Length: 443
Image 1 (cartoon, rainbow, N blue to C red):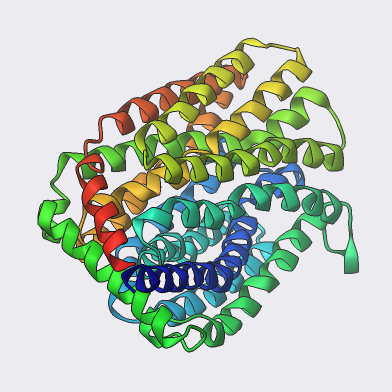
Image 2: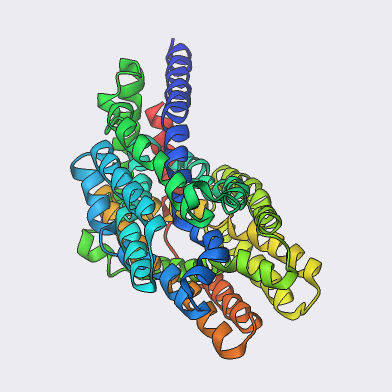
């Protein structure tokens, strides 16, 4: 009889986890893909936009990075809104807002307007990513969280895989006498508004509200989450203010800042670097720029899966960054050897995409529910300022040295430092046995 109960409970567990993943992750994936398209299409638009608006490399780097100054403002409030109000209403609101702003970027006429639109776009998108990371903790236990995060975050490299050829094609159009780079912003903004409306009807805030799950499935998810929270409190329970003063939280924030310097410095300048090094057409450059993210998509999913299987997070985040830094160093030294540079950039894209999923599993392991929500917002908001530093520094160093090599060396240093700092995080391991037992007892 007990074995029958265990088997039945195990079946409920498997069914609940499977249905939750199938219901939520594809939709959130598409929304994040849209966010990334609207965030990074400026990297391709600038191939013509900078010429038409007379934007220097330094101005483009500053404008590209200003996105993250706007991004800073609503991240912490956004995570708490998801925790205490409504995820679906919040996501719906910000999707529509950033879609409108993204479309308006297609009508800019000066560098000042460029700066304003990038700031507002960052403001609009700021609550989405950290909000989803918190939202996933409502539905997934630590056992599945890195895998779920990897499946969600995989939209980022896929956005570049799909967005690059789309951008290359849109740059060639001239509909109604309007330049292609303007159409790039307008066309890619439409899905954000549409999905903002759909979000209200599709998403569910909490497991106990999910009519698409059975009563037993809803109860299993709720019980598993409650037992995991009890296990966290039994090992280490912080208030929000205490958590923000912990060494691990500071280390996570610093590592994420350094990582974002690398990823957005690389991402937003990659098409320009390839264009100037090769002289190829915009479409060819766009297709080549997609290659690093084809490899990155596979690497992200594999690394997230292996991190969950081994329940190890720090080395799964650090090792890819050491590989990334090494590849960037070789690219900086490659000089005029374009194909060697491209090969190293493909390795950079493949390795850098592996960091995020195991990294974002770390805060949820160490902290109680409300503390984790606040700290995820803080880590993402302050850490995301690296997205300002990276593009700006590459533009600044390119202007000063008339070469991208110095900017790539800067990214090398940031990658190595980010990896080293994340290895200093102590949280996570003391909770492994406790959380595994909590999950088993929920079955």
